[in-house]
Length: 104
Image: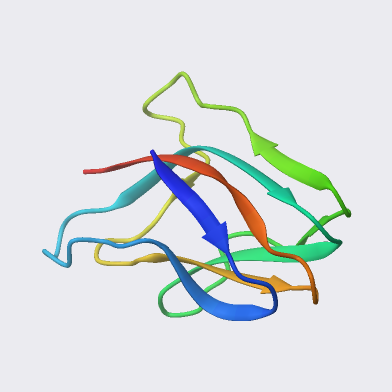
């Protein structure tokens, strides 16, 4: 797991870095975020390919992807050598939380 601390109104925020070995992939198994102000979140790979749609989060709201109990059914799987990035939109929308993942 890793702590998530995303700045407001910022593109290409690195959430998880891939080891760049040509084979390792990031598997996201759970996510929990809260936002102090209304904002939106978009998850992307390092080539700016969207992995989710734009997800609105209300002021003092949050987002939860429950932890997948099945290692073969993660929420997201990135291609080899791709970092997981985030884009936030919202003037006060810093987001904090935790992401549960594996690299294999």
